Image 1 (cartoon, rainbow, N blue to C red):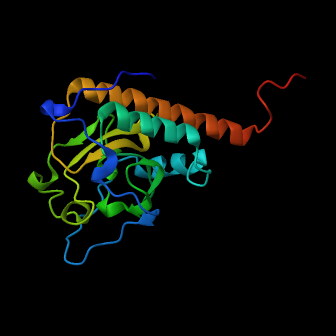
Image 2 (image 1 turned 180 degrees about the horizontal axis):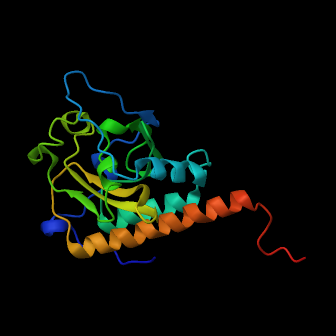
Length: 210
């Protein structure tokens, strides 16, 4: 998908990626004194986890195609951070990232665990104003996040593997048009995952003539 860059939200000047320091890939530990909330789960959680494992994407090498989609989302929405994540039973795994180098984090502090509960884009306009997230260690400590928008990676009906998400250190809104565009990009991610799964099952070149 080639989409022209969006204008800054609320007339803001164009943001750069310097808002979030990019360092070596790291885990996101718990921050002492910060309360965690339990991870919500949907009615199809066990089936979702089996589907996630069945794709092989958790153990697959990092894919440049996913990096490209992640970078496109960051540039299009002018977001400091964009991630492609997979929600496992206990952890959130990051398969592509722009603006923040992190490989995984505990599921119970991950915003994407809410995204996999619905086919809709999950938006947190201002985390400090939301009782569910105001004490989250990713909000109260580095990287001091305030905004989140995540489109679910819907693999099959009611089975969402993770999300394509945007994060910011400033609160702002996210329009219906923005949501539709992010969902379209998330569909691209799911297509790439499906191709990876197919390639793993049939490693022969697709153009091989018999």
